[in-house]
Length: 148
Image (cartoon, rainbow, N blue to C red; front, top):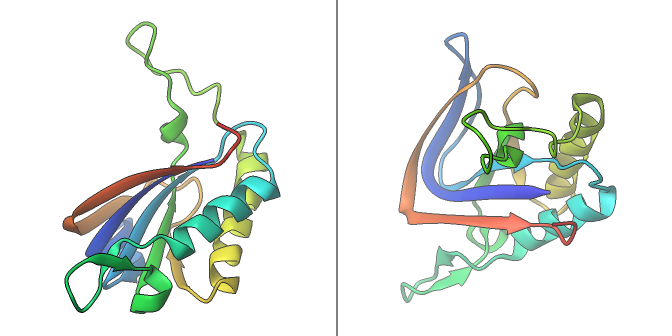
């Protein structure tokens, strides 16, 4: 499992001009599920994201987690994170989990974030989405499960 996270001032996901998920201060998560990922992978990544100290505290240091700072999460499925561009000019997505495997894991990942006490908004799995954001910092990190 691979997640690209961006600390944001605000972010939203639109489908056909309709907003389906929106947050203010928090994290935009682009979530990729790899063939072979398990519930253990998603638990590891969700717990890691919940505790990452990437928000500024009162002294201006990156010392607070999203949970401590009261931020929200916008989670967007993103199979293209597993696009392999090492050969040719067309990416290969063979490492990305099939939708029938990835979708339940994506939903379980979001539920784990909620169980960790976070407010989670989402896009729609497999939909053609327009994602907009204002990156805060900018802070952008990649978090991967041990299955990498």
